[in-house]
Image (cartoon, rainbow, N blue to C red):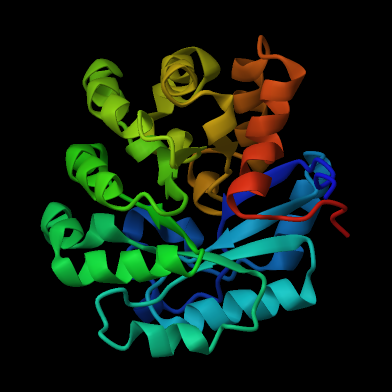
Length: 286
């Protein structure tokens, strides 16, 4: 079987029709996000950045989020994959997954673990572990969304679940104000697990205004390259959240400035190849 044609992808972005009750994480500091963000808003930005398509990732809890993203992907084939939401702690998980059995665009799931009262306890919960085990048996990717304080707990979780790909979102949200050393020490054991990949995403919104530049963020990207290698890293814009820190094009340009010294194969891995492999995406995006 031939390999899929290489694509340039945004492996992490969100769509929503905004209702305050659905997005409690959008506070007053994120007021610019309190509106609809839909495929027709993103497509011109992808075109301007020479990106072929994207992966739409859940931004709220509820199975209706999965259904809504799958419908958008059906209408817009350049949305090559969906990372939806399902309650992994539900004892009826298998029945819930059955409703999407004929949805090839559904590539994985995510929960906003970072917003749990005690993320480490949540990741250690036996019900959650059983649910994640079942997802991996079914061939779904699971994305781990945590803050850097919970990297050790995330490492323990990923060590227990190695049957399929796991993806760390936003580099584990480093505490950029305090520098990269402590973050890198806790990231290294997680990066040593070969089934774990990582998204180069979310750095701009984690950084303060004076740090939103290639010089300040280069150490984090270079450490991620050292720990994961290009073959387990993928670009994600985190649109529209990235708009809190700058324009979409600037998000892409910042990463490109940092990746300049890499080989063409390494560049292609980060800009699409890793995502194609991890999410089993086909080439020839419409």
